[in-house]
Length: 272
Ligand code: ADP
Image (cartoon, rainbow, N blue to C red; front, top):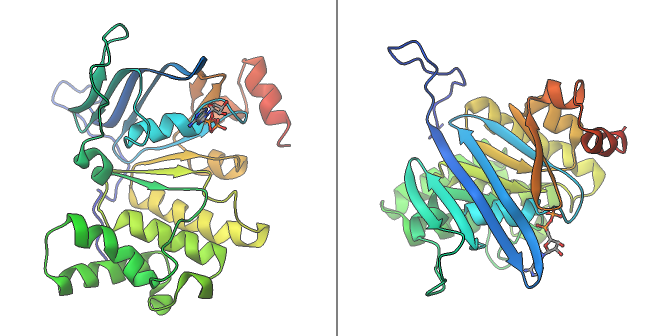
């Protein structure tokens, strides 16, 4: 199988003996308003290679808007976003907006995203859905791209369904096609926006399992989720957002066992 990320999670050491791990994606001081409402207030997040970060918090706290800024689907009012050290977006708080900035193609290409709704093209097979992005953006012979797309479908356990149309697949299978489609672009990081919330309960497990497999392979993941046990199990870090701000960011253990922040405790209580 093609694995485009290092299949290890251990941290590198530099010669000074200090931990030195490159941030794959870093957001600093992200602000965003919709009309009068400040939806993101100075949100920062740094995710290292191979890390899995889950973003939790009440509905309307800005989780989705935040991850959408990471792949350019939303343009922040101010802040800075870097991917593998390259600045993709940077604007000072008082800098006038001269022009509507469009995300750079590379930002869209390198940051894969899986949505709540699977958004597959209904008149294309699973394989064709996976192939669309690579055919448009990537180099390689048609044969090569198809082989890689099939490998991605294999990775999510759907090789046998490669030639089926979305309506012939269950919701869980469709979401796994959507995951394969994002992976086919060979992203540096994968974003998941409540990937199981549109699924019937009995189909949630297979999608979570697919995401968990990616985490174990060392893919860098940022997941907005209400699946608390899942987040606890697979995450290196849990970020709690409320009212547009990051209120808490810590290991699952600290978050679920030791958190002193009353709002986080109260929120988690609701999932017990
Ligand atoms: P969460 O993912 O935590 O539920 P969202 O990021 O979806 O939160 O939404 C944060 C707030 O921004 C909500 O109050 C939502 O209604 C508002 N919002 C989200 N998208 C838009 C938009 N395109 N236009 C106006 N308001 C929006």
